[in-house]
Image (tube, rainbow, N blue to C red; front, side, top):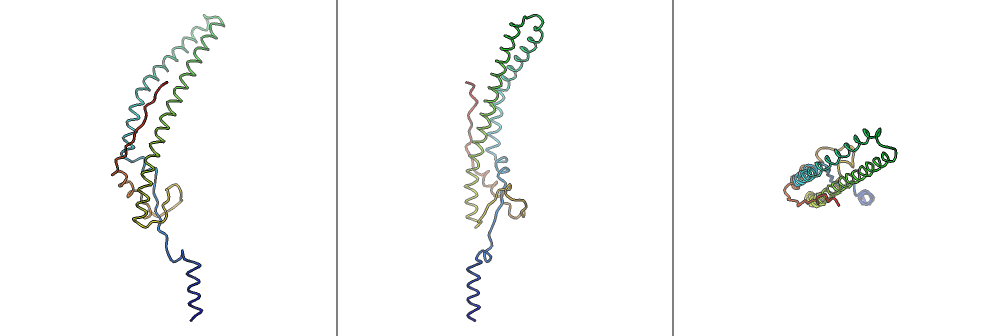
Length: 177
């Protein structure tokens, strides 16, 4: 009888995780961010903000195209020095425009990244609370596993709570220096 008791205690000490099942949850962070009402609203505002600049960019692009057309048509009339000067001016304008477009794109990519990080911080708070309330020991992002039961997916529950929050998301307009 004593040997059985020792064996039972030994099994309990060596294999404690076998006795208790871990509770796991899975969440799709991308869906939570992309479907968040505050995120959708701020993206619409960013798009409106960008429209003003896109009209200006189109004007500059048309100006550059006109410069190029004029350059092509005047190559026969201008001497080599004048042609080189016109090409230099065109390349200078094109480089300036390309730099402006790159700054514009970088600015709005950074703004969206900051906004997504702000939402992610709120999602993490909700996940921590949900894990405590539901006694979940491990929550994985949907990109961190291959296959899981749909019963483990807590995305909808978190999405409901996330959309109840009014997250104040702001962005800075592009400032062309």
